[in-house]
Image 1: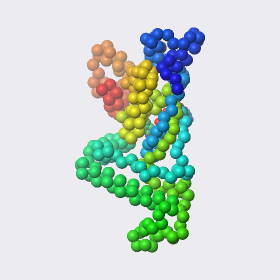
Image 2: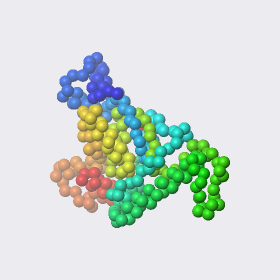
Image 3: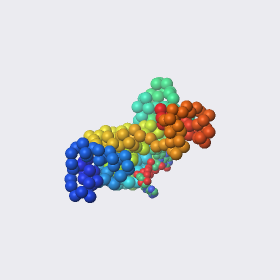
Image 4: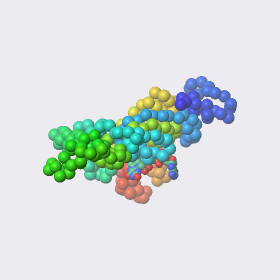
Length: 269
Ligand SMILES: Cc1cc2nc3c(=O)[nH]c(=O)nc-3n(C[C@H](O)[C@H](O)[C@H](O)COP(=O)(O)OP(=O)(O)OC[C@H]3O[C@@H](n4cnc5c(N)ncnc54)[C@H](O)[C@@H]3O)c2cc1C
């Protein structure tokens, strides 16, 4: 709801005028983004219909500035759709990032992992249906000791769902203003974010380019592609700008830890 003009219109409210020329609009939007004059971007409201695995939904809901309405698994039966990572996304635990994946495993093992997840999805969904009363013939322990009676008509959907894994799909409507959406995209399209939420953030970014080309261009330039520097990093950059040569020892003399030096280098690279 609202295009680039809604942002410009809000920013120009003091003049009591609508939009001016397109190039002036672009300049104004870039000025607003550059100087973090954020409220005009809040004039644009966005609404998304998203289908996503539950473990990704758990990351989405952390963004408190959005309004959400989610599919009710108390009211309706959940579908048998489960997320299984693509072959190239099945990776071992990263050794240098506790919160991520890295390195490689063999293609054969990756395929086995996918198949095991598939099998688990099938069997757990069968259990769910059994708990709902759709199938009372399931033999849990293979010996016939753990069976439900022929009279069993199922337990409530709100209880049966608890056996389902977090790679099951859910759906929601998600509404957020453009300022907060950009904040979400900045955090979740970042390489540090999990791949499975990154694909959603990147898809939203593409939609933003379509609907708010000027605002998104400014966001891309100043926020997505920009970086923040600490006071110390700025002191170092000023010296570099004056053609002073800075080596690793000198960086430590500025009081930066090894990790900070690495992150500073990564930022500049
Ligand atoms: C790569 C990555 C890893 C993460 N790892 C973890 C993790 O291990 N564990 C975990 O629990 N979370 C984790 N998070 C979630 C993270 O801590 C934030 O909760 C999430 O990214 C939402 O960010 P936000 O609060 O800025 O966004 P929003 O909730 O959309 O809020 C936007 C802005 O509004 C303001 N705001 C909103 N509500 C409040 C409030 N109550 N008080 C003060 N200011 C507020 C803040 O300025 C905030 O930046 C991770 C996030 C990322 C991107």
